[in-house]
Amino acid sequence: MAKRDIVYVPILKSKAGERWALSHLAPERKSKIRPILELHPHGTKALGDHIEDICEALQAAWGVNRWFYVDTIWLHGTSGSPAIIGEAFEAMRNCDLQSVPVVRTTYDDASIEQLQDIITEGNRGYMLRITPDVLDTPVFIGAIVNSLGLSRSNVDFLLDYRQHPMTLPDHIQQIPNLSEWRSLIAASGVFPKSLLNLPLHQWHTLSDLGAEEMRHRPSFRRFYGCRSRPRSRRS
Image 1: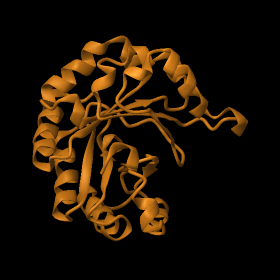
Image 2: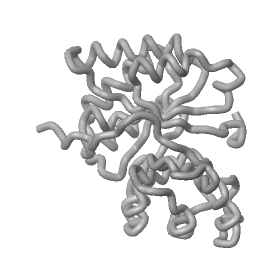
Image 3: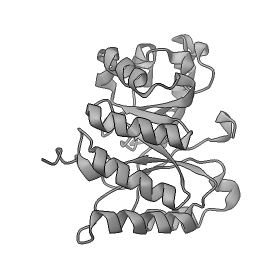
Image 4: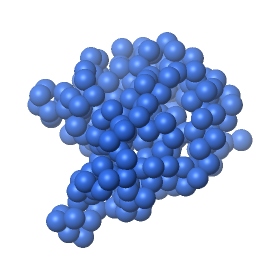
């Protein structure tokens, strides 16, 4: 699928309501989006059983021929967990799902090593999800890319503003190796007071700041549902 065939990347929880929404999209709509699914723990189910149930539901809701991103941070916290990450993507693989891992610069070495194996086996690359403050220390970004061993042409770059308004013109020139990423995605959980000022107009500003060096136009995304802070890493 060509890069510009994907025009929307919704950030969704993996709960029943979101899966229902995905299942009711027409095929031609599904072909235009690539969701990020954030896996959340269940209140009562064991983690393994819960993940298996999600994967089986995704088989019906999304199918086994379409890519989607999977972010496991809500299952284990900001440092990662090789055991939980491995369990999640093994379940995805057992259900023939075309999952693309989401990687964070905060993950520890053991989690990055586990993700390297998953990414190599999946052969779909990965998404690097960062917040704007990480751009102040680009060495962290380079270290992750070097550790995982793939060229940036196989990596989707997500600049995640979380609960803050999107100010992409302030950060576009700080993104390292801007022209080399497979795609550039910007997301914010803030809904504007007026739809007259959606950040899509910022493309004109980006062109003046040197975004013409990119191989593609940036994609603008938003969050769905309520968000809470991820738990700290389990001991």
